[in-house]
Image (cartoon, rainbow, N blue to C red; front, side, top):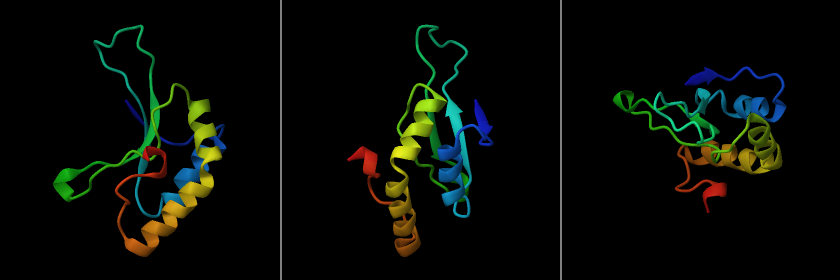
Length: 103
């Protein structure tokens, strides 16, 4: 299930989206499958649009977490890293091989 981000209660998520929105559209996703085990928790993360037919390869900007609050905290705690990532994109016009949280 995808929802366009418009979460005023999650200011750091909103800040992250605003930082990159001139570059790519963003969504947040919650894993919800019809046959999902009810004991499996939902996961939330921010990712970029994936449209291989138009040459757009999606990338996960955050790790999967178990709540929107945890996602907002991750964005808050790493906003300086995201600003550096944005600067990298501006200079090199490509994503790094690994994002800071994947290293």
